[in-house]
Length: 141
Image (cartoon, rainbow, N blue to C red; front, side, top):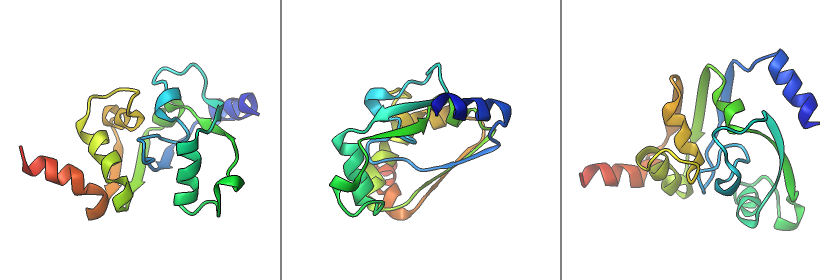
C-alpha cells in the first residue's frame, strides 16, 4: 500500500498540505524517534508508540487507548514539505510546548515540526493558548 500511495503522490503531486503538530512536535506520524528530514520514501508504515497512541485519545479520535491502532501509514517529512504550500493549524493549550519548540529550538529531527521553518510558504495558525509559551519566551528576551 505504501508503494501504491507513493506512486500516486509522484504521479499527482500535492499542491497544498493541511496539517497539525502533535504534542511531541510530530507531523503526520513522524514522531521524533522515527522522523527523518531526508527519508528516502514518500509513505511508510510506522509503529505508534504509547505517547502517539495516547494523543489520539486526547484529541478525541478514539474513545480509549485499546481502540487506537498500533501502526499507521504516514506521509514522510519530505512528502509533506514537498508541497508548494503548507497550512498548519495548532490550537489549544496542550500544544503550547510544541509551538515553543517549533518556533524557538534548533531545526532538528528531535523536534520534527521545526522543519516547517525551512519551507518557503508554510503558514502556522495558532491561538492565544497554543502560543502562550512562545509569547512568554519572546517577552523575556
